[in-house]
Image 1 (cartoon, rainbow, N blue to C red):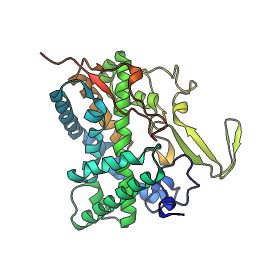
Image 2: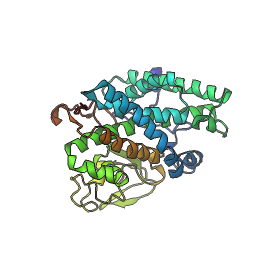
Image 3: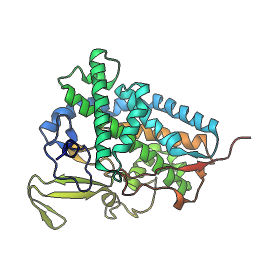
Image 4: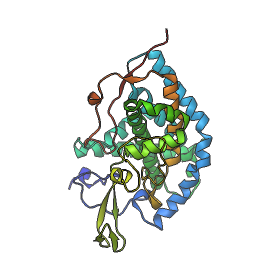
Length: 335
């Protein structure tokens, strides 16, 4: 076995062998009590209150990219102009990633989540990203600044643990919200009657978009004890693949689940998972979407697709997160 083959990637990929115990800091692959130690350290950094305090700053970040998009003029790729850079700036600022390193991290993270490239290329991206994060951890220990990663250096976490946690938080913050912003805009442009509802009720509207789109296609869970599920017995040690989109479109829970209806109550959707492993950054993602979506449609009320919907390049099995590769749009310029 080569050194590249021996690397265990932090994301599950088709054809990967059984995964060994999680490495230090890889808390999303751990069960209690190990999981709880990491979760307790991080939960306080991502509370509803703390994330809402970022609303004003996120609005300013959004306006910067909307200003630049307007200055460039139509048409535009809304992924590159809007959906990708806003969450990237926010998570990088939160973690304390220097501006000159942000593009490098984005490029590495983008390579890491592709499933249509050779494994050695994915491993190279993973090793490069973790090496750069290890350098950043050392820099924060030597000269801490006012950011989340610097704060964590004051805990009992080792350098290896901090590197892994920084990698996980950065990787998750770069791609997931980006795809929700892009795919959510695509959905709204195909259902323009919903845009006014979103502007009037952004909190409720964002929850329905999370239910309707379900950008994480599935989760894999292992039964810790025998359990009855849907009339079948899942034995302890067996794994179950949970289809998030199917759960979020369960007609027994959501009437007319295939319809996008921003007026509906979406309590109980699984867009951020469930239980002890529910997404740590969910409150940050919500704040970003509640700020960005309304601002986009206020700035460009005539926003529309620049190509037929069927020509928008949708992510398929080539990526681990559902979304669009690009979103060509146009709008009427002010005269």
